[in-house]
Amino acid sequence: MTRPIVGIIGNFYLMNDQYPTHAAGTMNSHAVADVSGCMPIIIPTDPNFVSVAELMRACDGFLLTGGRPNVHPEEYGEAETAAHGEFDRARDAIALDLVRACVETGQPFLGVCRGFQEVNVAMGGSLYPEIRDLPGRDNHRMPPDGTLEEKFALRHEVTFAENGVFHKMMGAQRVMTNTLHGQGIKDAGSRVVMDGYAPDGTPEAIYIQDAPGFTAAVQWHPEYEAAKDPVSRPLFEAFGDAVRDWASGHTSRPLLKSA
Image 1 (cartoon, rainbow, N blue to C red):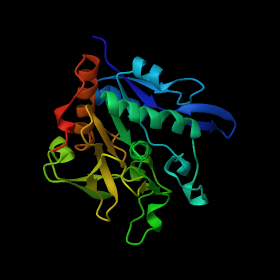
Image 2: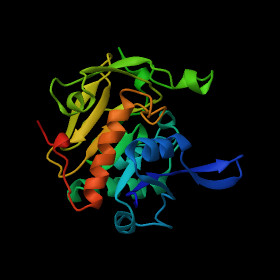
Image 3: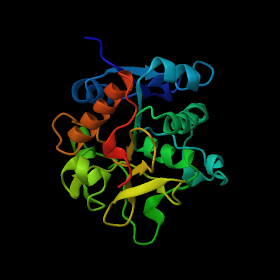
């Protein structure tokens, strides 16, 4: 049986500070293959190599991954500062238009970390360059030291809107998640529904109101140990169901309709 294809949005890196590379973590591929039940394909996210129209024809759904580069603040009308960190303008050029196109057509996507932020910016929203600098906010960044298990350890609770999209998807209103991000949502984009928050008020789960398809995005990294984690597994299972629906010609998943 042929599996539907999920395009995994890759990031640009200089390997060993010399060799140009497009890459995505293998944990993304494991989550897509093992939990969503789809075939993962890493995308060289650069308009020199691919177009949004070509990607939408080639893939049935998209995983908008995390990554060190941030969305450039020009994309939401702000000037670049040192606090904004590194950028990947080629990814910006593909991913933001891809989100907008998928919202309109109903082609499913799942946003993770930077992908969560891309969804908000694509819909006209803005970002804070550094969450930990805001009064009353916690440090959401990845611990600088330790093992991979320690860096991806569960660190804070996320509370979903009662009877909202994520509450129904997870079967729980409060869950524990990891946290490995510096930026976060400042102003919500058009139709962006904030459906989950960290204890310090940082938005953690969103979807697009009245979109015809699956438009879930989360600020944490659910791809880590996705098959074992009770929060990650239902998220990637729901995404896989939506991708199979799209591949078979059914464009909407009621779970992500507005409540």
